[in-house]
Length: 300
Image: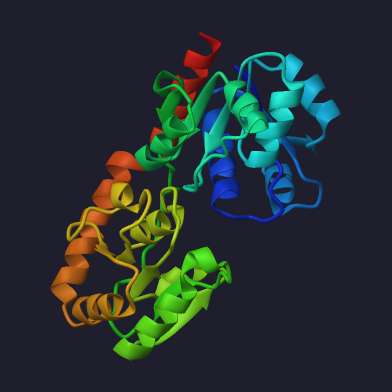
């Protein structure tokens, strides 16, 4: 199958990392992948380095390349707009964000164009249904996580790690209050893959979340997770088994931190269960198989 991917993101965030993981998995499965991306963006550089054909995400390229592809996959909002305008064959759209879809006339037209939607969680699928997308056009395809070959042994005296994001939706203000109350050192990370190597806990507090790929990364690396009971995160984390879910309340977050760091047996139990959950639900293989199944339904 020849597949055209479109992602116009400026940064290398969770969605762009999933694009790279999907591209490599599809190539390993014998499919031909081409990418349209924003020139100079980290995704462009990473995909080019990995040996994929990358061209600018322009309307002209969308129109030309999609006509040569069996299926086109739009991975972000701008890519969705480009595909809606420029693709004349079947295309699918990934939906990762948890906020509601606009109900304007233009939005209804745009959301009526794709053959299928790949929702990152049941929560996001519900948001699409509320916006009027027929449920039979929605596939839930969870994020995948690359296999981790080496994991540092867990230690309670490592610092907590949280996102460095200044996005008010990401809840850094709540984390700051909680770690101060719990008297826990924290690293606000711009490089999770590096900082999670020496972390006692990953604190993922957010006011909006489609699924939680950052939490999945921590789970795969053997770091217990405390996360918001919000959006798609309860689909990622089983309460008390693979992580700890909390309300967006600093005292409750602080209590969870103190409980986890004072109970190594609990931390190790969460780590082991989380690793098993990654293997059974959130592997690269699951991502690729779910995506290909959606492509086949779209081509139908």
